[in-house]
Length: 159
Length: 280
Image (tube, rainbow over all chains, first blue to last red; front, side):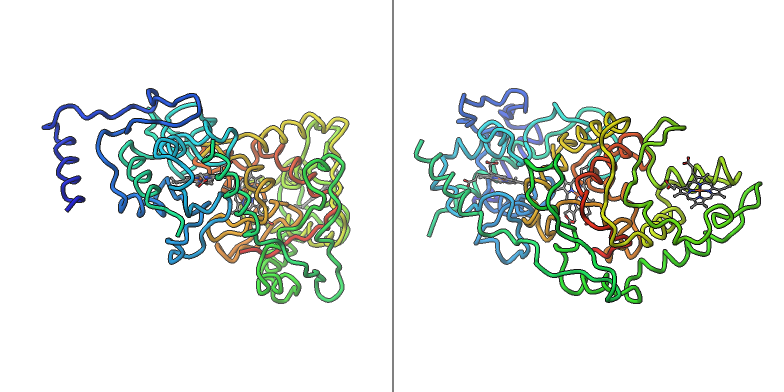
C-alpha cells in the first residue's frame, strides 16, 4: 500500500501536478561539518524495498564491496567495505544519508564512490563505454534513490 | 561520537573475511621453476613486504592449466608467433629470424622491458620495439599495438624468458617516465574515482563482488583469460580496469599506458617472467 502511494506521489511530482518537488540538487546538499545530512534530498519518503533492490543494481552496486547477511542469497558479496549488518544501530539517518550521498566527507579518502555529486572527476566516462562523458553529468544515484537506500539501511538492525 | 566508535569496530570485524592468496608453488612442464612470491623491491617496501603473482589468486584448476604447456591455450598464440617469426615480410624480404636467429635468442629480453632506448630517446615496450623492427628494419607494415599478431609475438618473446626475474630499470633516463606511470597508478579516475592502488594495493586479497583482487602484477602477461578465451595484452588489461572506473580510458600504445606499464612492471621486479599465463 505504502509503495503504491509513493508511486502516486512520485508520478504526480514527475507529472508536474504537485507543487515543485523539493529535490535538492547535488551542489546544494546541506552537509553539516561532520558530513551528515539532516533533510531529505527528495522530499519524498524513501522506499526500503527499492533501496534493497538498488543494493545490487546499476551505479550503486553496493554489494560489490559490502556484505549484508540479509542479502547473502545474492552470492559473491564483496569484502572491501564493512559488513552493513547493524548499520541502523551505528548511524543516524542523517549520517547514512551523508554516507550514501558523499562518503568522502565522513571517511576522508575512502574508496567508497560519491553517489550524489556531479563534478570534480578526473576523465569522467560515458558509463562503462570507456568513451569520454559528454554534456552535463547526472549523479550516479538520483535524490530519490539515495533516500530509498537510506530507508533500506535504516532497516538493518543487529539481531 | 558513540556511533563513530562503533563503526570503527564494524570496520575491524570486516578484516578476517579476507580471502588470502594461497601457498601453492608453480613449476611449468615439471621443469621451469617460477618465483611467484618475492621480497618487495626497494621502491615498494613501504607498501608491501612481499610481491605476489596473480597466479596465487586463481583457483586450483586455473592454476593447473598454466603449469603444463599442452594445457595452456596461450601456447597456441606462441606457436602462431613462431610461424610469423620465420615468415619473410616487407620490402627488405627478411624475417625476424634473418637478424635474430631462433626465438630462443630472445631469452633475457622480456625481463628488462619496458626499457630506455638511447637512439630513439624514449622508453620502449616490447610491442614498440617489435613494430620498430617491422617498420624501420624490415620495411613492413606495423602490427596493431595490442592486436593478435603483436600479442602472440610478445607471448613468444616472453615464453623463452620464463623463470627469469623481472628486472626493469627505473632510474637514469627512464626515471621521468617511471614517475609519470606512478602518478597514473595513484590517480583516482572516472566517476567512481578509483585508482589502481585502491583495488590492487589497498585491497588485494579482498573480494570485489565475485572477483578475488590480486596485486595487479604484470609478470604473467600476455595472459590467456578463460573469460574471453584469448591472449590479452597488458595494456588491454589496463584499459579494461580504467574503463571499469567509469572513466575515459587511454588507448594501448599511448604515452600514458607506456609509462604505466613501466611503473607496474617495476612493482614486480623480482617475480619470474610467467607469460603467457592463465587467468580467469
